[in-house]
Image (tube, rainbow, N blue to C red):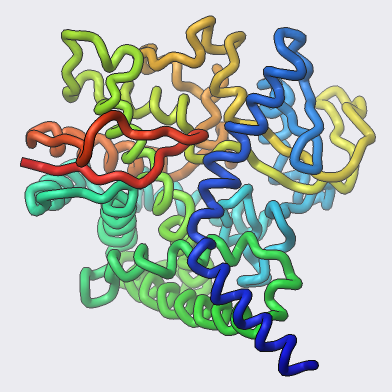
Length: 419
C-alpha cells in the first residue's frame, strides 16, 4: 500500500507540474478581477459596502481602510497582531520567506524595516549604480536584436537582466543567465511558495522543493559576491541577508511585474483602448509614463495583500475598529477602479496626468508609501519606459489577427513581430 501511495503521489505531481505556472494567472491576475470585483458590483452595487466576504476572509475595498492597514502593517507584524499567509497555506521554501498574495518578501518584518534604508540607497540613493542612459542602451540593444517577442516571457527576461546587471552588478552571462532564470526557476519558485504544507510530503514535490532550494543558494551566493565587489565596506552578514531579498525582487516582485505590465501596455497600444485609440495619439517620451501608469492602474500586477489577523485592528485614536479575527484581504484592484477616487470613467483608459498617480490619492499599485512603498519603482518605470521607446522605433504588429485577449487583469501570452 505504501508503494502504491508513493507511486500515485509521483504520478499526481507529474500531472500537476505543467499546470503550476498558470496558477499565478488564476489567483493573482484573474480570480480577484473576475470573482472579486464582479461579485462586489453585483451584490453591493452603489451601496459602497466597505467590507465583503470572499475568498475565505474579509476583503477591505475602501481606500481609507486599506491605507490605514497598509501604514500599520510592519508594526502590526512586529507586535504579533498579524501574520502573513499565502492563499493555500504557509510558505515552505525558507523559514524567513513571507508571502504577500503571490509575492514573497525575503526578509522578516524587523529585518525588512532595518534593511530598507540600505536597499533604498542602492536603488535611488547614495549607493545607486544604475543610470537612465545604461537602461536605455540595454533596451535599444535588446529590441534591435529581435525579430519577434513572446510576451510576457521576453519582457520578464529583460526585466530580470536589468535588475541583475544594473542594480546588483552581476556579470552576464558568467554569473547570471536571465533566460535560464526565467525559463523554469522563476515560475516554480513562485508556485511552490503558494503550496500548502501537506503537498511537500509527496515525493515528487519534496524533490522539486529541494531543487529550488539549491538554486536559491546558488543565486544568493552570486548576488552576494557581486554586492561585495560593489559595496566592499558593507558587513558580509548584511550583504547576505540583503541578497536573499534581492533574489525575491528578481524572482517575484520586479522580475514578474516588469514583464507582466510590459505585455499589458503592448496589448493596450495594439487594441487602442480608451485614449490610445485617438486618431492623433502617438507614443512618445512625453506621454509614455502616463501610458504605463494608467495601464498599471487598470491592469495591476499586484491586486491584493492577504494576511491573517490575530489581534483586533486599532484605529489611530485608540478605538478598536473591529474585533473580528481571521483572514483579511486588502483589495488593491477595486481601489484602483473606484469611481469615487478616479471619476465616472474609472474603468476607462484615460491619460490622467502624472499627479493622479500618487499613493495618497488611491494609486496603491506600488504598495502605498513609507516602508510599504516599492523601493524599485523608479528602476521598474525606467525599464518599461526604455523598452517602449525603443520598441516604437520599430514597426511591429501582433502575430495573428484581431486584438489581444485580456482575461481578468492580465493577458494571455501573445507574440509580436518586429520589422
